[in-house]
Amino acid sequence: MGKRFTETTIWDDDWFYELPSDYKLFWFYIKDNCNHAGIWQPKVRAFKSATNSNIDLNTALSLFNDGKDRIRVLFNGKWYIEDFFIFQYSPTPSLRNRVHKSALQMYVHMGIDLFSVRGLIAIKETKTKTISLAESLPMFSGSSAELELKDKEQDKEQYKDQFPKEDKDKIKDEEDYDYMFDEDEEQK
Image (cartoon, rainbow, N blue to C red; front, side, top):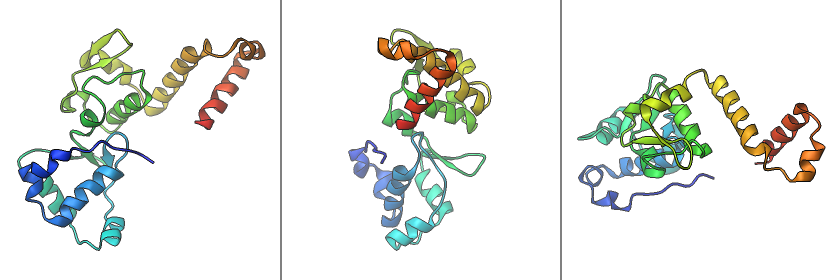
């Protein structure tokens, strides 16, 4: 089950205070049901059924974006919560953090320009090296399959030296190592 930080001062924001009750509840529903990158597939049937509310997606967009863009509709119809990443994670995400890296890859895959992610300042490549957004773009080029393959190869290198000595002795060739790595991933 996913967990989210919540802005408790939202109840003092005029835009939220002026929302009809059903749309306030819908705002929280979207935030609670979006993925880890803040992207939500518009489906209102479950919301309407669970809350006995009657909302309209176009009205919701209009209300939520009144005075400030809070929701961006993507090319595929999914909704992107503008400030989600920065609020949940950091203005300087780390490529060593799988959640951060996955969300950034998802943005690129969904056609979200990293320069348009409000509040994103830079990206931490390592513990001690922070790079600009422009420098990070080549890391996110390619298809999602290529990105997953790059991640897997980087993970292998990162974790290869972290197995106990007796496990290293059991690894006779690269295929054995691949199998151990894949099995370890499935358990998580």
